[in-house]
Image 1 (cartoon, rainbow, N blue to C red):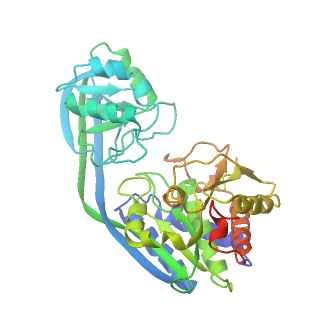
Image 2 (cartoon, rainbow, N blue to C red; image 1 turned 90 degrees about the horizontal axis):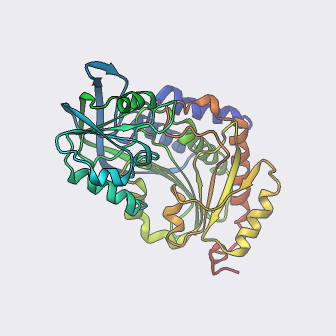
Image 3 (cartoon, one colour; image 1 turned 60 degrees about the horizontal axis):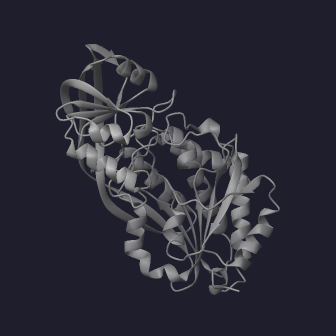
Length: 402
């Protein structure tokens, strides 16, 4: 272990969350984070590959919403095109209401069942049929713009986050939504100043060991939503990844190691797809992929889940976890980079936090919520899991292994 591991973890967190801040794809913050990550990898003596790919670079210049002439709080949804629309508002709270509504040339006010969770992007592979139906209805009904109501009181989370969705839209706090629905026929003026251009982002991949050797993959995503510091989601995971690079790069291991700092997790296009385009024919050589996403919250326990793994591998990991009473097992969950591997038969482990205060995608996701001691716990356990695989065969970890 590093002699001052907690200090190093805090240094990585501060650099990403405080000095750099929000890191949405294609932004200056995104590029600064990628540069920092590769600097740490190179300083550890690792061979670094930059997997650059194109993405939209969205710039928000300002949003104004007036209700019957009175200014109210709002924020443009991510990737919204610009607009200056004055029109009556039509409130719809269910799919059935949306099916029956006349939104042509009006401003649709979406709330309730329609905004209880952010709407998945049109190209998202985990999108439900219900979401497909909602998106299709919204596009067919040709509203001039949309207002989405935050489903809870508190910090604002944008409800639409899709660069392929071309209807101008903005999210309002719950109290503004209340004011909108209390008016019988609200007259709205929505002005969004924004621009989108072709941009780029990248995965930062580092390697130790020779080509053709079986390898263990360690990964985390470093990008954030538009205006969050992204401490738990996911500077904490990146801090663990960087600390593991500093520690394991000095070890004499039997197998190769690969560290992947993914971009394009919060918004499409996915960095995972670019990794597969370049390295997808090498998945058979991976013993296990270990992902870190949302680890280390002060008010939660670190958690672990396993995917596509042999019974003997699961037994070995279970035995290791017993040495860490602060870590709890959770059911497998799909919403992070480990799924890229597990869905293709690669054994995978996911670290996160169980019972955490919900901060991801919010401006409140700041550094004080992250416990360096809990991050050190994850680093220690992950190091043990890597060490335990040094005398195992490639097939041993797989579901057919024995």
